[in-house]
Picture 1 (cartoon, rainbow, N blue to C red):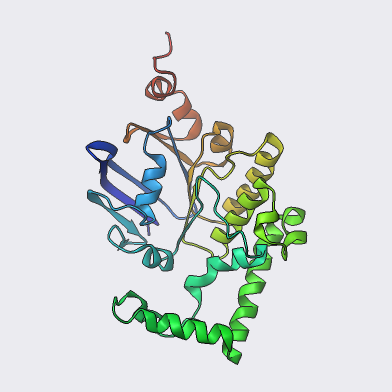
Picture 2 (spheres, helix red, strand yellow):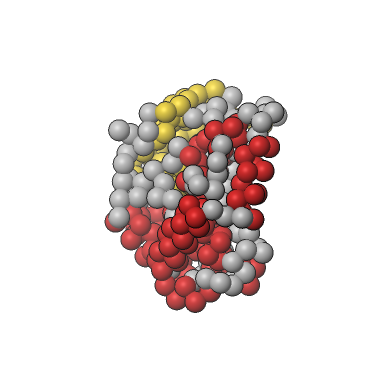
Length: 277
């Protein structure tokens, strides 16, 4: 089954069209990159898919399930994880706890009555139950915590000496690059059906970028399905099975990385002119 199917997606802001009738699909185990000039609609597309924004029209399906009107929480529970253009970590939590947050949607013992959380009047009841179990955990909650910590440690080991020695340190003591690594680990920990990466190496130097590229290549080799937004074309070329190029919210090219880089419409979008013949 196709993991992600986007059909005829459209989104406007105060009359400005940010995404214009966009359609594409992502297959299991595929890495698809969205590229394009600044303001072309890449991050807006990720925000529409992950539920942070609502589309004006069009459909989005994850594993065949329509999600364009689902809440962020429902989409996460359906198997989607993401990172953000501007790295986001919980500064006061340890590195391990930051990664463990990514497993919140999988908790059962620590989240009783979770089905009530969508009810406007009753949603405070499961919140109070979660608080009570956090203060006085039952044996099943303690077992679940042990499982969560073990899974968080597994992801930290993916980043080796960059994160493992810092597992118990507050996230606000990390370097910028290690905060980005922590965010990627948090997105991966729940083994998502679809991983959205929004410029995961933004702000990194060449050495840091190359390290993260190698780690993402390992994630790809393990079969993780990824939709990637990235400006560094060398990284896009190395990781991607297909590249989609946006310009002013429209899809102007699609195909293998090297083919797309030679497309005249892509060259014009990036350079503002067509390549001389």
